[in-house]
Image 1 (cartoon, rainbow, N blue to C red):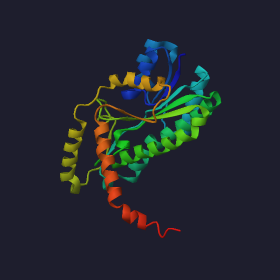
Image 2: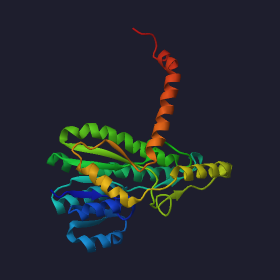
Image 3: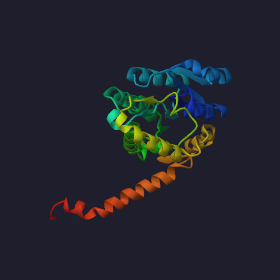
Image 4: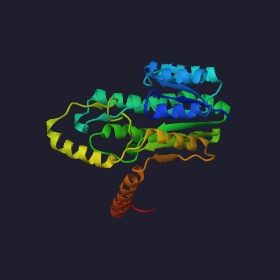
Length: 276
């Protein structure tokens, strides 16, 4: 059976690739972008199976209207992809209040609004799959993108809670955690805080570490089949990495956390107080 997708941030990157993957196999896609002219090629190729929607995900009323329009057009929603987002660069001391709020408005509240708008339709039909696009930065954290990491950790947290809350309605949730890919995440779509000269030397070290960590970036086109496999799975995962890099990073990070917790376990237990 053909599915109906709702994909935010479909103008480029993962959103565009996954829209193409869905459309090429006969599914329908409501594709959102700030500029719908970026979706003209999809409309030209796939016709009325594409519904282009102009959307700023930080506008809650507009989000609810877009989801409603999508359901009205196609009659159902099967796969909801929260892909819209961007990377905010800057040391924590450098990030302004406006930059921090804007990062959370898009990466956290945008995904929250879309999720809340879609859930009544998914509950009513007794099915649906929500894909939340996180990052290896939602598992670990790195210098100079701390506020971005914070937004993805928040997305991961509410999505894990969401998965438990909606399972009985037949709705599944998958958190997608890509590593470095050849998209413009760190390029045209990125934002940069005003630099504090005190961090100049460390900024160079952080940039070198990021370059080494990124290594051989993945091909976004190669993620198409992976996402379709997740959507088609009888029991889709709560979390899945995309690319080769994330698992070693997460393994090292979590092993370090466990080692520290165990080292300090006696202090932690003493903090409980006397046993009854």
